[in-house]
Amino acid sequence: MTGKRPQPRNREFLDALYEEHETALVRFAMALVDGDRCAAEDIVQETMLRAWHSADTVRSATSPRAWLLAVARRIAVDRWRSRQARRRETPDTPLQFIGVPDHADATVSAILVREAVAGLSPKYRAAIAEVFLHGRTAPEAASRPGVPVGTVKSRLHAAMRILRTVMDEPAA
Image (tube, rainbow, N blue to C red):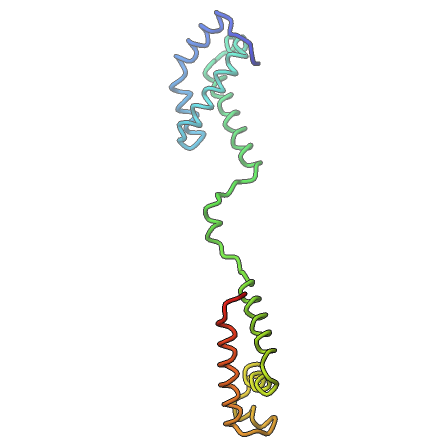
């Protein structure tokens, strides 16, 4: 196909063919591609290219317009099938708004809290575990080791103050 030059008589025939049928062909092609002018012009161009390659066939056709319209229709159908066969591309822009859960902060916080609690004295750790880990109230937590409720409350207060200080320290 490439490098082939039109014969002078084919060139004149093609010019006349285009002049006579271009308007009808563009209108027909636009109907095939839902009014997309650029796609319609591409179809017309491809149709005329095929008419040039098959000039003798078109010249001998009973109706050159019918031949052109049939070719244009096949080109449009081929374009449609080609688009249907390929996976549809999705733009990247909506993907930037899709949230992906990031558990890194929670994991780091859990590690830091574990380390900070491990650094507490056993009596403070026991008070924290009873109330925050096991979900007991201060009176329930006091009944377990048999200490007064006030003692549990003061241990919780002291333990929380130590944990806040440890957690607020900048990382080294």
